[in-house]
Image (cartoon, rainbow, N blue to C red):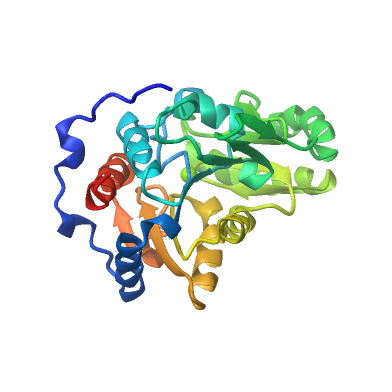
Length: 291
Ligand SMILES: [Mg+2]
């Protein structure tokens, strides 16, 4: 087991009032979480929530303060999961979650829940990629050339391809210019093109973070659930938490806000100012729970 280094003092500088949920359901959920942490599921997105979004996605590492706080929370919360569009192997490499004391039962659901890693076993389960992905990848360069974007950055994830326009001179314009051609090419191969922050992700249809969250709640028997995310791909998880909390489940929706995406903010019980604030909030939660 690897012991995490002590966090810098700035991570615990916030006062409780800084993290008061702004909604009634959020305040109820927080009270329930503090009263019954052992039956609480904490599920967090990776990019933009635990790890800052930077020009090179291959170097987007989790904030060490956030990982340290998760490790503290691992001793008191019932379950901790990372729910990400990244492959499990990438999330493990960039997150550094493997072998961390406190994260012995962490679950990572990668590629929107298609892949799964359990810290308890150290094993990753992943089905074969969708059949259309090979044909899509073969046809993609010609489509990008036709859009005048032959040099755009691509990230091949095995089950999905991510096309990044961040870093281009007109990143937003290039993103829009790719909308129709990528959607069309994806459909030809039985895939879907999902938008994100200056990225298009082309992947198989049928699995999203909502399905992933529903499965986690059922599996863990959680009475309280926290979900934290930052981008459009997190909305299905928001939908499921919203649905489940019309019943007996308490849910807390937390947004890692940015100037690039505000779709989650007005649906959140707690809006945080990016990944640094997420790390501070996780540290605050650990302190509240005596971890
Ligand atoms: Mg994200």
